[in-house]
Image (cartoon, rainbow, N blue to C red):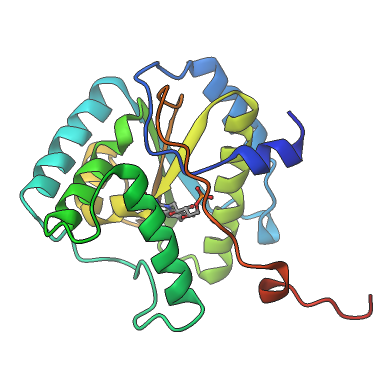
Length: 221
Ligand SMILES: Cc1cc2nc3c(=O)[nH]c(=O)nc-3n(C[C@H](O)[C@H](O)[C@H](O)COP(=O)(O)O)c2cc1C
């Protein structure tokens, strides 16, 4: 698989089979992903790989919170800026509409937030989740580095035939996650990334993208 194919075929998959992810595959992916660039080569990420019994326990605890309608722990960073303006609000709404349709959750379902939280808390059925943390001392530049790193991981997973779904929703249950993985107090949970093989027959969602002219300006060419 070349890089273009890996980029093009990566999607946020929200239906995984329970086929386990082999340890040697994950070792290969994470070893290669360590080559991701970071400003000053700080490599500011710390990843906890959770599967098997510990993940089952985490899903159980997070799902119980989601199903109880728990609004979640106090956020350490906002998922989105308050009052999203155009064009971001429109992009957000369009992606959400596609996502909920694919998950079979009606737009006007009053139980929608709880259903969404519950699906996220189950990691969409994934057999493995990577939790990416940053040292609390890190700033916006290092958060950007962590994003570059996670995309590298997700593309390498594609090269191994695996799929993924990054999930900021895990920050709602950050205390539950941190207790289970044993994250040090000085670390902030950026997001989880569910990893696994796509469940056969799951709806194939391909989200749209803004036109290049909206996001790129060419100068001098
Ligand atoms: C940092 C990050 C956090 C995300 N959090 C969630 C999440 O909590 N739940 C979810 O279903 N999707 C989540 N997504 C997936 C996005 O919704 C998805 O990437 C976007 O709609 C584009 O779709 P695509 O990845 O399928 O191309 C997240 C993506 C990123 C990069």
